[in-house]
Image (cartoon, rainbow, N blue to C red; front, side, top):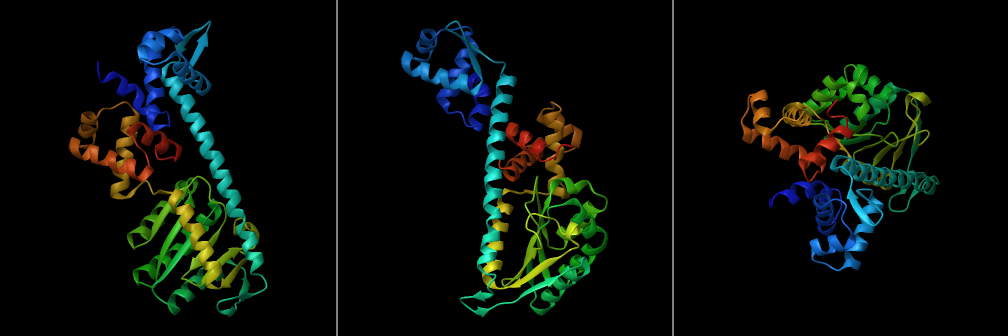
Length: 336
């Protein structure tokens, strides 16, 4: 009996309710149609304090009040309401971040005069064509190996072009230690023909790839002093005939690296590879209602391995519980 409140409260605590709120929600579940006085007595607290906490839970939608009595919503419905509100807040935060990212256009305008106050004048080269873009990257890498290439790709069409025609030269360059690719791509592009195979090769030769639901714009940095910007920030390259700018200055490259780091911190690793496939397998089977023992028998591994894969998934997804990991994995498309 002493373990029951923990079973109910853990998901709510994970989603932001404090221990007092989760304990009160558990009390409402048990007492059903209790008054404020009943609940204050059960919680060993004052009526005013418990009343304020009840008001908060009513606002959250996890309980409701009828004629002075409080009833708990079904735990699944209550948890779904809390999750929905948390996702709404995350979406709003994402929109605010995207708005901040748009301010980079102002930074570029500040440097359109063509002068870096540390090193003097710098060049801005306008180019067009996918061949020119990918060959420029290899040319820069040959001049100063090993070069770190950071790139954000916002659309499926660019990913399709990359997988069909341009991935192989970059993969070969990684094998020859000319460059290392770190890429952020939209999660929707993972199902495109050829993309999985090419990304797997890219990772196996030293690259790193993460996914976001939405990537704000294409851009890249090639080493510490070269940056690539689209003709129109927020657009994709194919829709603008692969028109882009190569800006050779440490200041702009540094700003874009900072932007890339912010996006990278929010992005999620690829859901495959030996380690990734294991994480996805246990999450999918758990979503079907299977326990650890059943999952272990299904996969032909030990229960210890199953639990280690759950721990890996929670770490990769930034989750504090298995339930939270399942919600985040579903949102990221891992369970499709």
